[in-house]
Amino acid sequence: MIRTAGTILRKDLRLELRTKESVPAMTLFTLTVYVLFHFGLDRDSLDGDLASGVLWVTLLLASVIGVSRLYAAEREQGGVDALLLAPVDRTALFLAKAAGLLLFLVAVEIVAVPAFAILLLGPGLGGALPELLAILMLGNLGVAAVGALVGALAAESRARELTAPLLLLPLLVPLLISCAQATEPLFRQEQGPEDLGRWLGLLTLYDVVFVLLSVAVFDYLLED
Amino acid sequence: MYSKGLKPLAAASAVLLVTAFALVFFYAPNDADQGFVQKIFYVHVPMAIVALCGFVAGGIMAIRHLRSGDPAWDMRSYVAIHMSIILGLGVLITGAIWARASWGHWWVWDEPVLVSFLVVFLLYCVYYPLRFSIDDPERQARYSSVFAITAGAFVPLNFVAVRLAEAYTHPRVLSQTGGSLPGEMRLTFLVSLAAMACLFVTLWKLELTAKHASAELKRLRRRLAERQPAAVA
Image 1 (cartoon, one colour):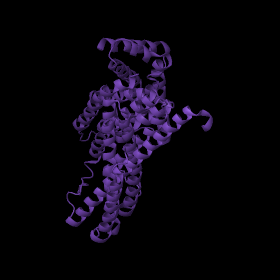
Image 2 (cartoon, one colour; image 1 turned 135 degrees about the horizontal axis):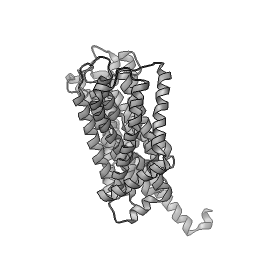
Image 3 (cartoon, chains in turn brown, cyan; image 1 turned 90 degrees about the horizontal axis):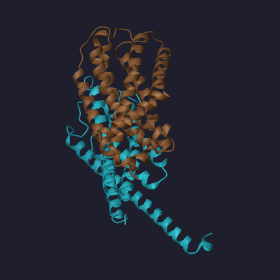
Image 4 (tube, chains in turn cyan, yellow; image 1 turned 90 degrees about the vertical axis):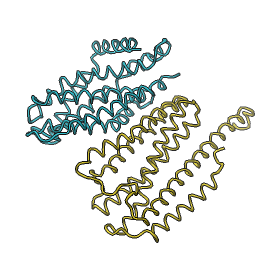
């Protein structure tokens, strides 16, 4: 199963490298949203809860673009039928799509987070980097699991470009809460008390629940 | 086949509802702090509890559908979620009225239960566009079930998250389950809860009966049309 997933993932990554469809669009989107926030809030620099909120809302909105394109190739060219004909475990498709989305998000964040620090963030990013990386990784994992499931769920509906964000964003609210709350102390001007552990715990719980749940129900989306 | 027991159920919910309202207006004392307006509690909280249970029950029925492949379970899950969304709208409206009366604002963001309910409600509203944008009935049932299970698991998780986000600033004095209510209020609350649950089951059964009957009618019409095409056309 891991090998099958690896093969599908390699296919997706090669496709992305050749067409350059999702990651550049998502990155460009985050930069545009920063500009929108700058004018919308009329602030030159942000700190504390405002900064962490802007960063996370931007990243989650960018992930919507990735999710709605996630199964485009499979849908348009009958990749799912081919997968169903092959004697492989269907969970492999989920694993590959989730891993692909995870890598897309990492690639976006490599540009988007430094850009945020330069464009909008008041206090420096330096000291808080390890914590921020841990939060980003756990957050990406959650988005990847939910996104891979929701993308498949929405792929069959007629108005999939509308259904995917509507499904994805409410499901991500607990993730947004824990990520934004965990990031908030890192972005403060003066370091205050933080309870990173509680939020990372909640984030881990969220990730575990949705990874297990998605693996359990994903098979039913491909049956035919 | 669904209509069995519908009449006694309807009678029971009518009796329970009347009793509940009688208790609310004539038996339960006015709240010392909030006065008469606190009585909306006996509608709002049971409605919220029943709606949330309905969402989770919809998820459990969806699991049974995926396991057995029986479309009847999908229909049950759909109707349970449908009814819960209707109740959920009631919860949000009564909640806003209560918030306006006791806190002076139509909407209060630092009330974790209200906020989590809104998030859950928004998520379940997507059930309709998702379900009705899939044409193939068998696939529609499967996709709806997957949604119902995911959302059903999301309900408790979301409540934990939103509660944690507010926990430090707003400790909850009165638990919503009625654990610390004085005797008369508690009895009234429990009767209201029973009435609301009974009403939910009745409506659920009624809707299932109606759906079943119209499906049956469609089937019979089709058979009639096959037998004598000229007469129907």
